[in-house]
Amino acid sequence: MGTGKTTVAHNLARELNCRAVDLDYVIAAREARDAKEIIGQDGEAAFRRAETEALREVLRDETARVIAVGGGAWTIAENRQLIAQSGGLTVWLDAPFELCWQRIETGSAARPLAPSQEVARRLYAERRPVYESADLRISVSENESAEEIATKIVELVDEQRETESQHR
Image (cartoon, rainbow, N blue to C red):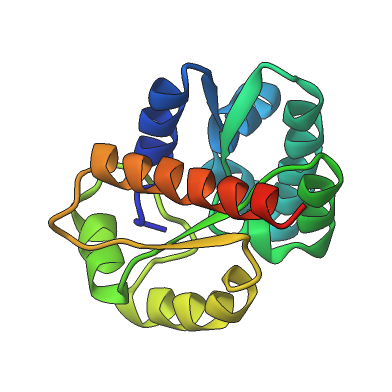
């Protein structure tokens, strides 16, 4: 939460000349409720099930080349497996907790799983080990724009492809 996934995803898609999809928006459209409402009314487990179904649907759509998944989506083993099976490259936007919390506090998005700084910090610490399994880790700082982060991702992917082709 608060790393800039959605904003970076849209900038990355623009740079790659493709379509970006925010999984939270797909869920809201499918369920006719946002994450806060689903979690509040049905619980987090119901939201995670809806999230996995939405991810499965989006991964079948070959026009969606950049997908911003919610912070908890990656913590679900089935979701990581779906992404891997689809051949997706995963990117972890690694921002310091203080930056994430500042964005959570000042942002307009509802964060039902981060009602307090203490709860958000615990969630941040719990999720980090799982996030480390992403293909790429991008350090995010307060003074970097979403455009700069997207460019950094493209450069790292290009470097990775070049290295792989040299080893063939």
